Image (tube, rainbow, N blue to C red; front, side, top):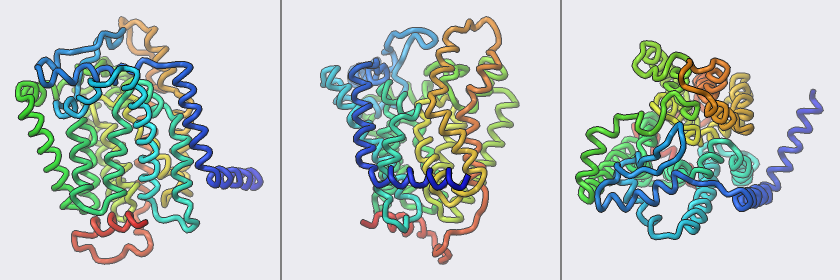
Length: 420
């Protein structure tokens, strides 16, 4: 057994030393896969074709016609997102796909680099190589592949949030990154909890200001569409697709497959949501207490994915920062962290959810959801809960962080991460 572990470490060191080449090969294989087996990025098509309607009206009446179980794909984001996507409408379709793919892959590298940057400094100085190696591997994780195949915006928003939090000194830029991401798509708003937990009060205020300013600009440009979205559409999860589908990897989706068509109003849902909130709060408190910045961010992002009414599998790109924390974070040697990673790796690497989707699409909805699909279909919920427990274990502060907290420690600590 010792020899196996030693061999594994040797392979890992070799890969880290050649991380740049690993990333180049991974990107080349991705380009080859896209070129030989092109996908139909339906979400990108929605962004491109719906966005001009924000100026002329009818933004939320537009929909791309597809096949069941989601025969219509409407525009589901706030009006500000349509303004951001407007330049896509000026590009030819092929050019839009190429640009979006390139920018998304670059965003994945930013996510990996910034996630590693939020870890404690490595004594060997190989943090950059480690980040490139994770980006090379992350390109083949199911949520990332699904995001790229659909032309989704998740990687870009993840890069915006992580880039703002890990690579900038000023409170205004850290807060604005979270606020603008939330103005494009509501789910990144959970990043505000990270700012509060790490006592970055000014950055949190700037996040609210940036989000409100972006929303105000969209309201000024498209008042009717804005009023329609914020008064009715924002609270309608069924508009984006069937909550019960295995495509939805939120807690509500998992319970709906186990208990009924939509368990969102059941007592079980509320009890489960309360329990997850307690565990996530415990994890966030523990991570913040030990100044574990990546751990705190992973805790809030996984919590957001769990309690959101709909978290499609491509929303779970935060599995990459989570796995980086599990392998390199302060609890990497704990059994629970290793167990969580041991579940994440095959679940995301073997593309379990797409396989379950293919089986689900053959079902008829005249009978209860099969338990044989419902239980494995809860895999991301299980992974997230295991990770939250791993984060919550232990509250000791990391060495050198025992200084008195005057309410600005979060700003000082974040600023120190932007050293060259």
